[in-house]
Amino acid sequence: CSRELLVNVNFPGADMKSPWSPDAEHCQYLCTQHPTCLFFSFIRPDWTRDKRQFFCYLKATPSGQPKHQHPILGITSGFSLKPCYPDQQPCLPRVHHHVVFHGGTYQSLFTADHEECQRACTHDPDCQFFAFFKKDFPHARHRFQCHLKFSWKIPRIPRIKQSASRISGFSQRLQQTQNFATACESKLFPHTNIPGFNIDVLPAVSPEHCQAFCSVRPLCTYFSYISHTFKCYLKSNPHQMARTAAAGITSGLPTRFCQPNNSKTYVGIDFPHSDIRNFKSDGVESCRRTCTEDPNCQYFSIVARYKMRLCFLKRVITMPVPAIQKEVNFVSGFSLRNCQYKAT
Image (tube, rainbow, N blue to C red; front, side, top):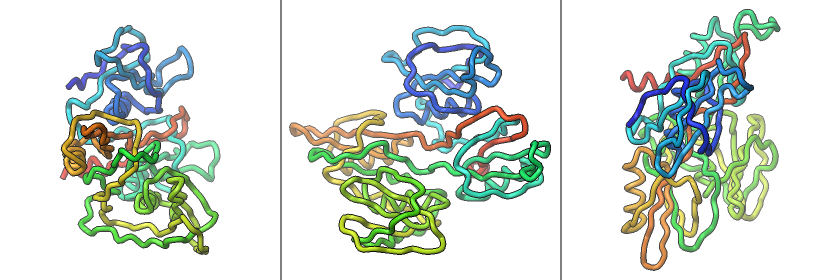
């Protein structure tokens, strides 16, 4: 477990992915949540050689260590916190001046300052990050505007496919938002489509999985799920809901402030890639129990082949990854909700 950040040090090569990050601490958590990242290099805002500021380079080697370390101004490097078993919902208290977080806006309001904007984000269960227009923003009508922004809190599985030898499912630790004792009751409309008004299309393994996505997406008012393509269509229209009969499509409504049921397993379904580890397993229940007990695991697939069962534990990044840009008249940051939970 190595928490140390190496300032003005680069780990060249071995890149797997390069998402945005506002600082090295956020980049370290991205590496931690990525299934196979072992170390990283973050290009800081003071980097001047090119325009790669705010890029977080996630890296891995067979040895688990960088092949080279080079001293260089403007880069901070470090290691995944996977061995430390950190909280997978990190507290990100720092605000970023002269930086704008793009995308994901679902609500705008006016606040006196960025602290009030962050408080609004923290107390809104849908908000994950924010951007605030400072008082000297060039266009007067936008000054003091606070944009509340959304990021997925449940894992989006990159790919779903049919496979006769696979059984897949989810960790029972997964939660939509907070700890709610009430179980969600599904309101589904079988053999029904709600055409139009699409705001997002995601891979989903079932209507209930699609419903979970709709339930955490602030603008989603209803959804339609096409079973043979595993496609979940999230829709937004608070004024009307016109249903039509359609074979192979299930539609439904979101649930709010309740605990999703993650106990269902899917026979003949594989969730490929995103593996964190695998091992020989006694069966589906043993595989799911191990996934639930492992804080890094979000979902799993079990393979039955040649009388041997292999359990593959999997995860994807679920913390906010906003697009980032230098902008003089902005302040951006994250919800402090996770920090409040740790304080209590």
